Image 1 (tube, rainbow, N blue to C red):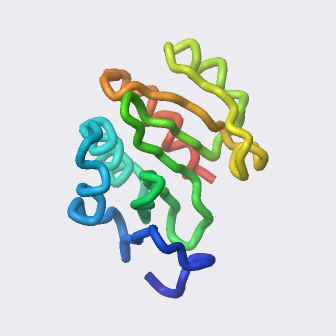
Image 2 (cartoon, rainbow, N blue to C red):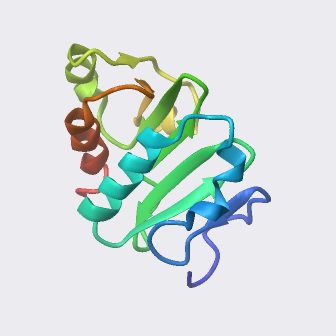
Length: 141
């Protein structure tokens, strides 16, 4: 990676390019389900050119951006589900809810910036098409 992205975070590891090697995050998630996030990571890498990834070992989230752009997506790994914060309009909330997902606004920096926050995806979901449709939208700008 050329230069530091913002303030150096103590618990964050960055991929030089593309996705992190699994050994950089596996231990932090050892007691949590990871199959869904692994599938999402593979699909993002396949569908989004110039994608980069970081992982916060303390808060247990993956962050994504393209090239030298700003972050566009965070995926927090929780015990029963993923919590997704994605840089797309709240106009998509109704469509996501209609697919059976829960969405609850999170009043954080991303939420106040207009991101769709608090999209909860159970680890056992089978609807990868819906997930990838909205995640990939964040990188279309």
